[in-house]
Length: 154
Image 1 (cartoon, helix red, strand yellow):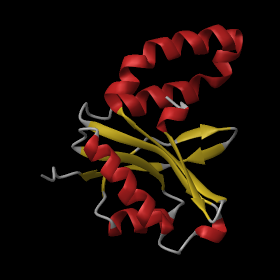
Image 2 (cartoon, rainbow, N blue to C red; image 1 turned 90 degrees about the horizontal axis):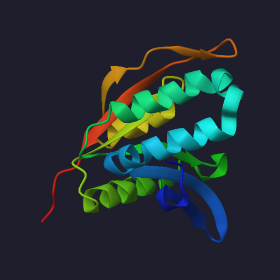
Image 3 (cartoon, rainbow, N blue to C red; image 1 turned 45 degrees about the vertical axis):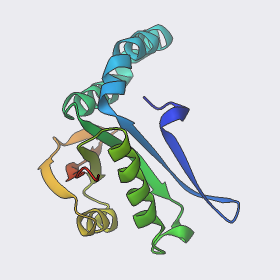
C-alpha cells in the first residue's frame, strides 16, 4: 500500500519540495491479504497496540469505491507552500488517476488543516462525510472524506 510504485516526490531545482502517495483502490484491495499476513508476522504481539491504526487503514480502503483512486498522502515543505505547487501536484495526480481508469479521486483531510481543505474545495473536491473521531495517546483526530469526480476526457 505504501510502496514506491505509488509514491511521487516533487523536486524543484534539485531540492525535494514534497511528496504524495496515490493508488487505485483495486490494486490495494488485491494486495490487502498479503499485507495483513506480513503485518501479523512482523508485529506479533505488538499488533494489539497498533490495532486502532490498522483497523482505520482497512476502514478507509474498504469504503472507497472500486473505480476510485485514493490519495493517502500529499505534503509540501512549508517554504514551497502557497506558490501554486500544490495545485499543480493535485492536477498531475488527478490526470494519473484518470489515465489509470479511475472515475474519481478520494482523500481524507484533517479538519485542522483548513488551508488544505480550502485548496481541495477550490479544485472541485466536495466533502462527502466526516470520519468517526479516533484517539491515539489522548489526542483526538478528526477528518473528512473529500472526493472529486474525474470526467473522462477523449
